[in-house]
Image (cartoon, rainbow, N blue to C red; front, side, top):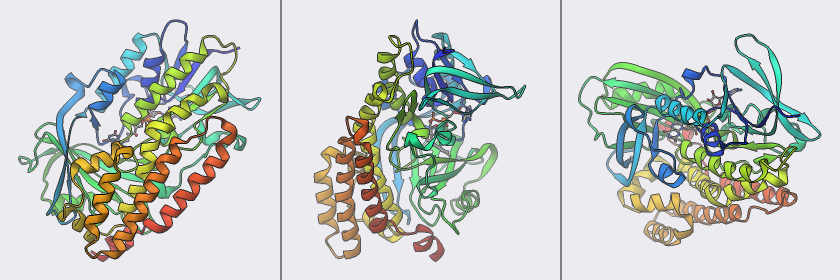
Length: 461
Ligand SMILES: Cc1cc2nc3c(=O)[nH]c(=O)nc-3n(C[C@H](O)[C@H](O)[C@H](O)COP(=O)(O)OP(=O)(O)OC[C@H]3O[C@@H](n4cnc5c(N)ncnc54)[C@H](O)[C@@H]3O)c2cc1C
């Protein structure tokens, strides 16, 4: 009845991690990707990842040709370039193709099957369940159905399965443009010695250069850097390609060669409310699991993949038929109450930052209202951050009434969102009520915190 136990649509970082973690004798896994095998992993990216994911998830860390630079800290620069925040922590810049080819090799070595050069067109839906995928061979144009007990949508931002689900799955099919970062980046060889340290990554916050986002410089060795701009794609907003040229000129960065250039999109909001269905799991960008504050999504896709692998492994071997929404629900609960809760709280900070003017960000950084360590704690340990919020609110008392009001609202909504995700329902029947509450928190945050960054800073420059 089934061709495979598991079909993983999309052999990106999430799909391959899941395949690698799930592969064992007795489980038949098919990975499908539209790219030819040797190009799997070629993805436009900032190429930066924290070392903590590899340690936590027990995945071999980047080494050899996969590793471009070892990074010891992130430096966040204020719009006026007068203040910095240093966040210490080990990380890497990587050669993404080399790194992902290694993940692929490791998965294939464990017996995973690969169907490359094949487009996933959508799910096979029967009896209110996903029972596999419709695929098209890129070379022959042949279309066929491949059946499995469980199908994973790991096709990233394109979400090839999710987009074509029937409405009764109650899974959001598309993500609002408002919640997407549009980014463009170049990997360049530098003409002159860099003005930055090569063991740090740099985040430059300024709506003037990147309305609603930021500009980054991620060194890859001494004379090569990944430099890019991510923006909130608003009406009348500037194109990141154009902004990057202005940035190079203003910062006097001279390139001797553009090694690779390209753009892409990342969802930067909380995880979708529903990430499983009968016979279906969503992971990575297809589930909107990237960090809403900076768009880093590799590590989050890996976390989700590891949780999914454990939940699938528990159910699949003993089952003759598909795994139902009830079998797979523990994946949603475990993800939402951990990584999902942290990311959801960060959506509130994203809206707050997009609503702050460059002058307000300068003020916060100049007055040292928040330190690098504190920022890291707000990002990674919301539960322990009430003291930091108290300090922030106390320091802003001095006279910035409007800013203080927004900070107070942000603090309340940040904790409300975090605790709400911690209370993700144990049973799918309670999801609608939970989802309505999520939407009311988001609505309040958008109305009270967000202001159009194109209008409030960019057009005034
Ligand atoms: C410009 C930019 C910079 C970024 N910088 C960083 C960074 O520095 N650090 C970080 O951690 N994250 C970064 N991200 C985000 C990160 O790339 C993603 O969050 C991460 O790749 C998500 O992994 P995934 O496995 O869900 O999807 P992907 O890595 O996108 O993989 C999806 C896979 O599915 C395949 N696919 C898609 N559609 C189909 C289809 N219809 N049929 C068959 N196959 C299909 C693709 O070929 C691909 O192999 C950046 C993103 C962008 C756009």
